Image (cartoon, rainbow, N blue to C red; front, side, top):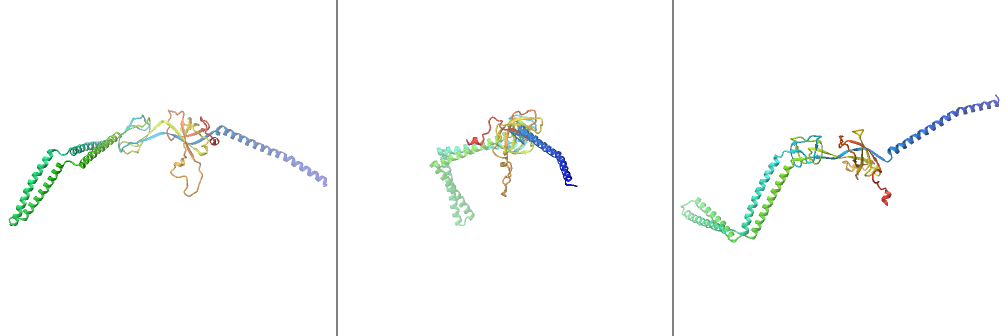
Length: 388
């Protein structure tokens, strides 16, 4: 084969290969274009979704209904006598909820009244003694004391004569030692009694000393203090009896009945739990990265898990200035010195603008929130504004 024929064949093969590669290149370019179009559509869709559903909003499902809920317990210990309401009952402020057995407390009241009466008698006696100390002994008292002294002096003379006679008889062996000892004891006793009566007569004749008057005044004050103490105990006993009847602290619904009649209770131990529906709110938590976007007054869309078709409106009423981890029983800082960064949660409260009254909405029900940032009456100042 000549060179010319060989070159001709080579050219034909090249042209065939080029013709075959052209459709493949077109298909590849088409796939690239289709891919770019899909990516542009996805980007446009993502941008549209962000613009419509994400931009200007903060969402959280860490939220639940809350409100004023009080555990009602007695202020005095005792045994429950009657529980006058059941779970689900609507109660009004001041309505009697339950009573305690007050028999033992009434016994304390009677005891306190007796203590007041006894202390009052002690005051009267102390005042009589003070009157005697201030005005001195009466003439009749001095005369009676003198008569007593004279009578005991006569008894002393008689006892002395008997003792001397017993001594003479004993020295003459006409009496026994027992008779002598008995006469000596009678003489010593009569002598002591006469000395005491004589001392009392002299004190009465001298009159009352200043220190005795001061002591009498002090005794009156002590007696009056005992009366005040007894009356305070009586008042406390009467108050305790009054606390055996426990009323509702506000209008609300009984959501839990913890104890039944006959159960023993004490201050701080719950008997009933009452919820105030008028205070229904939402307690939620948001991530700390969203804190700068949310402000008090921002509008909130509320979706209730228990009622999928229910959509409520609300607004942020309060943002608390402490993260939930600060109130955790287990500290966030590890004792080993290691550190793991965890996104903190900021608690906030949402006021419900249109709470329904015909649905069973209560504390603990889960909700999902969508907060529309910068929708409140005034937006939060930026860092640049704060520096100015």
